[in-house]
Length: 317
Image 1 (cartoon, rainbow, N blue to C red):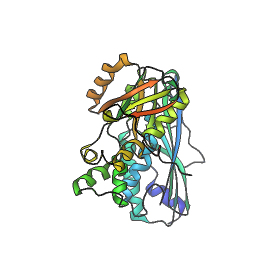
Image 2: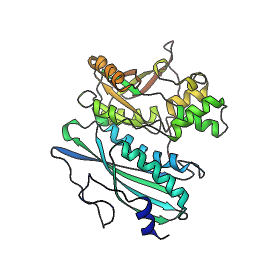
Image 3: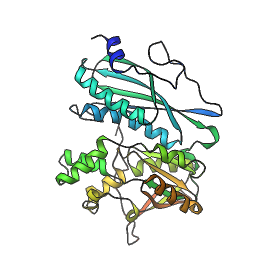
Image 4: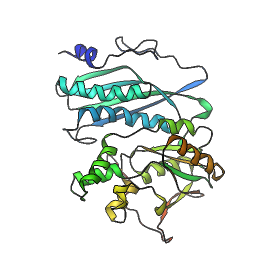
């Protein structure tokens, strides 16, 4: 199977959202009137972001999901994607499962794959995602203001908990691992939440490298500080058994691969945000406050300042 047969068989689908999709030198895209493009790109590398024997269906899902999470954080509607993939060989059973996982999530969110590239090499997956958002309604990292509440969606640390178990750094029960591994391998991009937060949130970011690291990016962009209440951080049933340990606390505060949204909003919008969580059947937790100054302070349930340790994942540390 050559490169073009591979593309035709596994990655060519109708693209009704595009003027021209896969098959030419470039795609042709038409942005809706009044909107601007939100564009993001994420790369997943074998051995760095996933294990070489990862389930290909789940890997196809995650390859797109991590990019959709960035679009969600901007309050944008996802529309198009391009996929660049390096493969050690043209393994057709693997490709069939990978593309099935990718397109199942793409269909769920109305995303058309409109181009990309394939080459031989170590397994490497890179998606560039395009979304649309009214220019004045895009959520940004730079809008947090003193007095804002800090919110997060879902629960924190489950993906890092699963990885810690896989690496032998802590031991989970069979049921705990099954639940946390689902979060690690099949993250759910919070597109509906991002859209609902337009006009309500002052700032937003997706949590990919850990709460403290990504909140820190938002604080830096907004020139503000934060105070976090450790007891308010949302924990799953699996995490609750380990949250009091150092490893568990690090998973919650600094673990990567959550792909939840962290956002800030005026305290006066608290009830509106709670109502959004109810409508979306999504847990939304207020975990602290934006304050004047810089940096992030974390307090335990007794109000004592705690040292959280590492701020999150860094590729070149």
